[in-house]
Image (tube, rainbow, N blue to C red; front, side, top):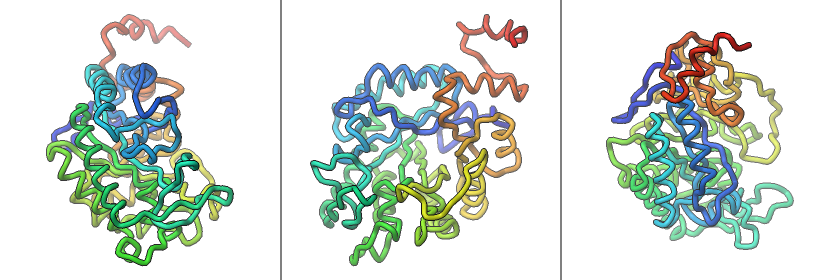
Length: 342
């Protein structure tokens, strides 16, 4: 099942294996370079079905580090277009993850912003509370980023609403202590961003969203709350990537990470919220990935670090599962004698 196609709106992926968004920290002023082109295109050659670019900032101060990709100005579009086109030429569907770091950015000298002046960690500076006007400007930043993503030719956009970044800061009681409408309704900013994205992004293209299904910190959002939140947003979102944690630098709730430890989050979103989901978290073994799909626990399996170790991971996964998938024509000679290799 890992190698069966899946469709979101008018976009069909050749298989259900997604490369998760993973920061590369190697951009200059937000611009993509040859590293990004090689990195993403090689995973498309390796037969990934869906490829999510790293968190790409909608505002210059929204980067996690100075080396993060950007999409806050039109000049970023040509470099991103080259990546999208190359991945698509090799058969993958490619999207860009839109985000803003908020209080988790490294631009200390220029001032961090957040819903409330609550520092991320003890030794971090307290961010400045965003004004109403600035919040509205950021909503427009997301909309303009979606417009640029379409100009760059991406197949989907992925909204980063997880891991303690700006949108998650608005939705979490741990970081949003406002006494205005954005505090009493902690989903307001997320909802406004999604509405703006849906208006700026073509109707025939999907929107994905990454969420922290549980915050793993005392007083933070819990699974039932987040699942209900996703259910209320299903008109905007075509796939939810179900992750967890990272609101605080060290979790107040101890937990053990193991292969498949986050799969129940994807299962809950799929079954209880009625939204297609992607499972993440140490799902490197093809048999585990196949189990997740065959038992209806998720619709897509997202893999991160294994794709860093092995750009051609889907080819190896198919061999383990006994699945017949197409190889790039120049590599066919290697496929024929693979059985003789230890």
